[in-house]
Length: 162
Image 1 (cartoon, rainbow, N blue to C red):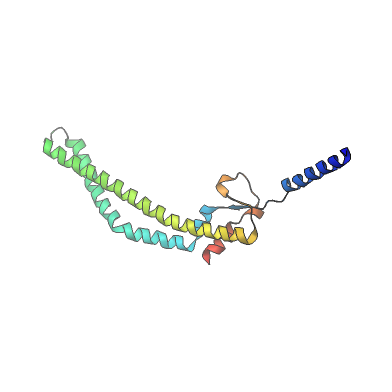
Image 2: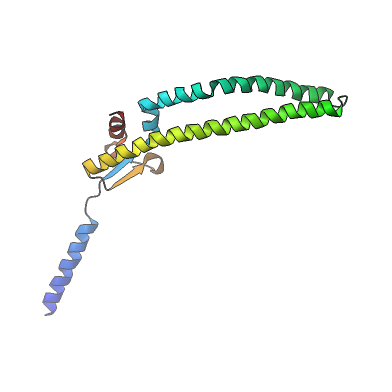
């Protein structure tokens, strides 16, 4: 009886160690590299430039006025009337507010477009995972070392280009 229990116990232990030593297929992807090499990336950059170009030129002109106002305040601040100081300060403040709004709007648009590209990358990764039966896919920037054999960056780029 003890032999049967021992044999069953050893069999169960061996069964579970088989699961522990099962081969795990891991892939690594450099998302930044894929995004930088995507054909759509250049088009997105051009579209953003085109969308914000006029406003950027307008801000450059405002910046010149704000710099002139700041220089005048610094140079003649003691002798200027309070209304003139207020006017110059308002010019500077308006530029700062407009520049901050422009910067925020540009970053939001850029993030929105990057999100669209990231969605395409995620879909490509899902297809590769399904086709090649990966158990785990990690971002390259979170891994200290990985051999080239587990790098699926080029495969993902090929899927995204299709």
